[in-house]
Image (tube, rainbow, N blue to C red; front, top):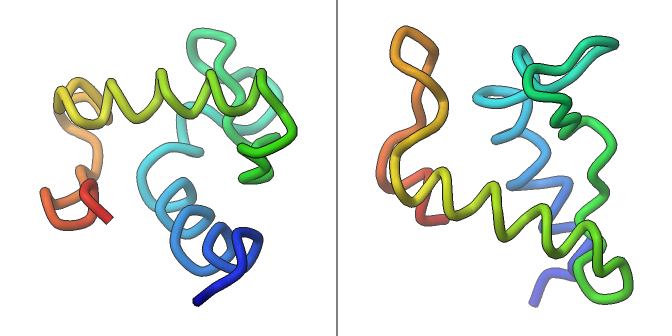
Length: 79
């Protein structure tokens, strides 16, 4: 099985780059939600785990990315 850090590097970081960081990265992230700082450390960083829950809920509800932005497929959102 893949280690948590490896799964983050292989799956989550590329997903964020493709679908999130154009708005929620850089020096002025939209909604003051800076996803570029995330590390995938859900075990020991409670604040990051809670943030991931919020992001996941928005993705599952198909609320983000907004219309007109590259959107992940249902399969990509599920993985």
